[in-house]
Image (cartoon, rainbow, N blue to C red; front, side, top):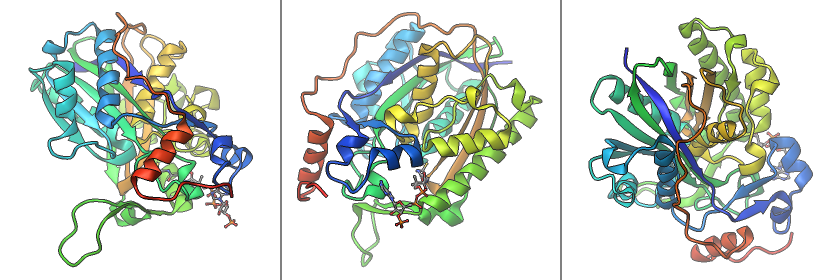
Length: 360
Ligand SMILES: CC(C)(COP(=O)(O)OP(=O)(O)OC[C@H]1O[C@@H](n2cnc3c(N)ncnc32)[C@H](O)[C@@H]1OP(=O)(O)O)[C@@H](O)C(=O)NCCC(=O)NCCS
């Protein structure tokens, strides 16, 4: 039976970093509070738009798969911070890659975006519509963040990662998946953004509705249930899972999901301390890092639960293929950045006409 094997992978993290101590220079917060409540230590701030991060990650994934861009048939870009809505941002990635034979579409389910994008590309490959695809999760969460709101601005970061999928008969790829949405709770994680009908209030990218504790509980329950369901469907036990790579929104959420599903803590991959929550990019970045750190073994069973605004939820169980090393490296790089993370935050705030932050 044809499956979609993952044959290439690449990440792109912008270089400018903001530590918890940097945030404490202008917010009433501390490294202690952020570390103990979230597990986060630092996050990246991008000096380029989402499509540039996505392009670099996709170039690296194509090199890892040893695939020529002209042979690519599909580009799927998942994000909730697109740098262009019309035309779609994936067309810019297709153009920059020189992947002129590829169809392209954008997808937004917030933090679950990469998992939903992976699901659609997997289905198109399995049904023979395309033979291969590059699936990308890319975010510049620094753009809509209300930087002076400590309950939000410590949580998110920027970055991207991409995987190449190819039709294969080797039995690797997605084994089982669940996708869903708790739409009655859609307002507990929302940014006013989009076109409004006449007479309704104007949108404001920086106006967030965010009920962290409620999201936390719903995230844990939905990810755990979906994980248990996919394991059951695949006829596997929690002890069969070689690596759990969950959405990285909070270390305490990761620990709670692993405990509920019955996965030992040492089998849950965590990199939230390095990047914070990069929304749709968290799981693909974490899988790339698991490969780099030799935590992905040939034939490994990998469980990937995720959760995001919507409130969308998902769990994806995959079997890794034989290869854990890239065929080759790409020489594509981001343009250089001379600004520090704090300087980039100041620029974002200045662009919005907001006063520059001062010491609390
Ligand atoms: C956001 C989150 C880390 C907050 O942790 P929490 O333990 O629930 O903390 P609370 O919101 O109850 O806040 C506790 C106190 O810390 C304060 N606080 C909030 N942010 C703070 C910060 N950055 N620094 C210091 N204090 C902070 C609050 O004001 C509150 O003070 P009070 O008790 O005097 O009112 C946690 O709820 C969470 O991770 N939620 C889900 C994350 C999420 O939705 N991610 C996006 C979707 S995937």
